[in-house]
Image (cartoon, rainbow, N blue to C red; front, side, top):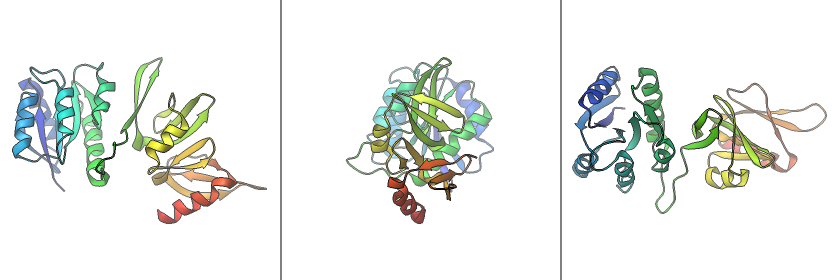
Length: 242
């Protein structure tokens, strides 16, 4: 499948660099380059694009304002922000961006972002009159703001008044409650214990413990996650549907 992509940035050199990085992507067709947010909206009134690489600081409409208006389209494109400023990251995911890249954009990180965009385009089926769930979680750590893609989460576990997120890059504490996460991401995670939710698509097998009890094993993790007797039937039902 080939995805139609547009680049929106007021800096000609930035557009040229992105164009060069995209040349080797056989599944990406750059169909337009634009230098401001309003031009992007006007172009999309007449044409269709799957992905938008969008700068944030531009004359007129900012990238955040542009992305917010894009969400009003019947079939909004996937947005990947490419910017020199990191202070807008939290706001970026509030307008449903799938990634946030800092300039100069590296080939490897752009590839990661395009992979995420492809995953979203292939599997996301937003329903009318529903608020889409977040694509990323945010956490403030001693290193600053951390963004955790939902697709990279293995499981959530309650840790006193916080929730520990076990993901592909390690573990991070967040302020969301386990109940809030279950309500928001119930279609992607299943409760296996009163204090744990696991990613459905990562479930590999169910194992029995010596004596009694069960663990669910997830692709990419060595250790299993405990399954309570109360939730065992739910886990088995989910596994049958995978």
